[in-house]
Image (cartoon, rainbow, N blue to C red; front, side, top):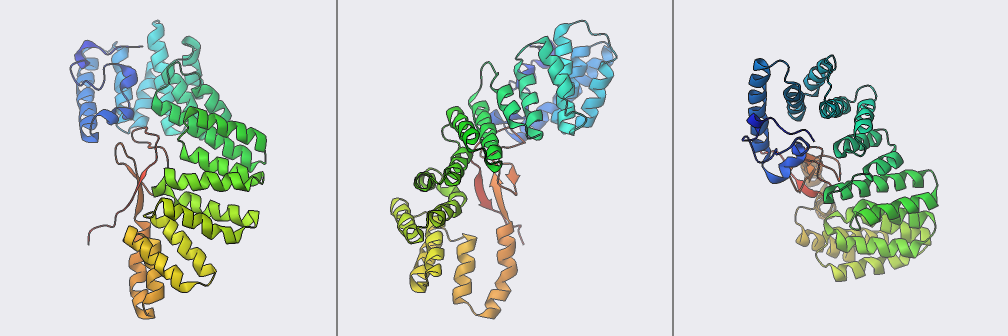
Length: 369
């Protein structure tokens, strides 16, 4: 591992070594402090390389800071220029290859930096940072089997890296399921749950495998348990739960399943609304309205229940007046990283800003008038 030059050691406790200098450092500090530290590093390193044009390690580090600031093109140019130097120090070679690989990966250029990351691994087998970068390359290409094998080589995987490995296996399982390869899909999802038994995406994928292999009772049980484990993400399981009952040809039993889920979780507004929809299909309008009301009592801002309530109780002019607001309200849904609070429009389990793998919080955030 390449250590920082002494002048950088007093900057921040965040960066005691180069491998810790990454967006994941946000876990221990605010984004603002992290960015200020990067600015300080740029200033110090710029002065150092002005004084010593042969300070290769400082140039390499400066390029990394540029990339962390979001300027991967500038980092790439700097690191490419360093290739012209005859670097005899194996550790500096290793570091430069990794940085070039990560630059190309961020820019999604050429082979996404694979050749440089492979060069780094040829100098030091199972180097953690090179393995992480190569895993990202394979993920971009949707080569999930290679990604899983690569990440599995990490000598000491952190809890976040175990979650990452679990999600890679889950994506591999989904890929194999789409191809109709049920047994390999099952093996992959088992690998996902070994790496992280709490992985919600793996559980959902396993339910799909159960349904594809006509094991509907297992799918229903798993999805029912999902509602309790991740109540704020129940919407991901409820449609699958309906499908499992339909495919099993037990439509009448769906009501019992939903009522039992409500008995266990009386405030789960997703399940309350799902039962209301089911009762409407069975033309039991009054009961359906009662469960819409309960859904709104559990969560007054649940937009689907609001829309349904308005369509049932407001006249046409009121519905048309509120339609733009409800549309914008629904579009304002964001999935928020529980670590650094970066927001995403589409559901994700991974934060590209800080590297967290987790179940994201859901918020509705309309702009101020």
